[in-house]
Image (cartoon, rainbow, N blue to C red; front, side, top):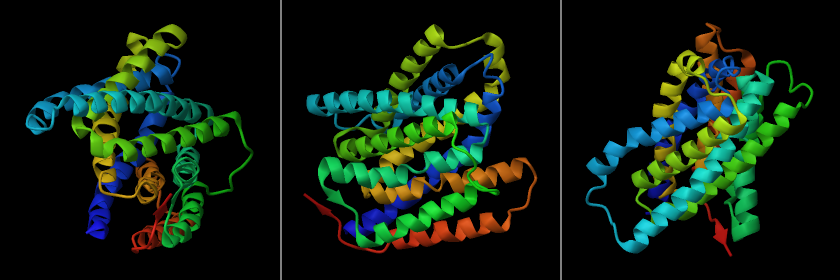
Length: 300
C-alpha cells in the first residue's frame, strides 16, 4: 500500500515541476523591469495573488474538513513557518535570477535542493533514503547539468551563491511540507503560507525595495502566471503530493522543473533541443525511474 501511495504522489509533484519550470523564463522577463518592480515586490504580489486564488477553494473543497482546535492551530502554525521560509527562498531565487540573468543556470542551482533534502533529513531526523534513491541522485544532478549549460558552468558569481542559498531554503521548505502535511488542511495551509510570504515580501519591498505602478503594469502577465500557476497550483499540488510520498523522492520529481525550464526557454526562443539537452532528459528520466523502484528507507 505504501508503494502505491508513493506512485500516486509522483504526478502531483511532476505537475508542480512543470509549472515552476515554465515560470523560470517568465520570471526572467519580470526581472527586466526590476528597476520599477524589484524581486521583493514581484514575489509579494504573486504570493498574495496565489493566496487570493485559493480562498474560494477553501470554502468549496474544505468546508467539511477537520476544524478541531488542534488541526486549526497546526495549520496556522505550520503555514506561517512555511510562509516565512518560502518568502526567504523565493526572494533569494528572484534576486539570483536578476543578478545572473540566466534562467537555465538558475534552474540548475535551485534544483540542487534534491541533494540538500536527504542531507538535512538525515542530519535532523536520521532518515536515510533508499539505495535506489541514492543511486538516482547522481543521474539527476548530471542530467540537470546537461539541461542547464551549453558551454560549461562558467565562473562562480555572487548570483550563483545567492541561488545556492535559495536551494537550501527550498530544501527546508520541502521538509517542512513533508513533516506537516498529515496534520493540516492542505488548501487552507497553502493559503496561509502564501499570505504570510506575500505580506513579508511586499512589506520588505515597500521599505527596502522598489514598487511602482509602472512596474506592476509592466509585469502583469508574469505576476498573473506565477501567482496562479507556479504559486497557487504548484505549491498546493506539491503539498498534496508529499502527504503520501517520501520527501526525497518528491524532491527528485520537483527538480524536473529544470528540464521544463529549458524546454520553455527553447520554445520561447524558437530553438530546437541540443544534444546536451537530449542527454539531460534521458539522465533525468533514468533518475526518476530509479527513484520509483521500491526500497527500504530507514528512520532513526
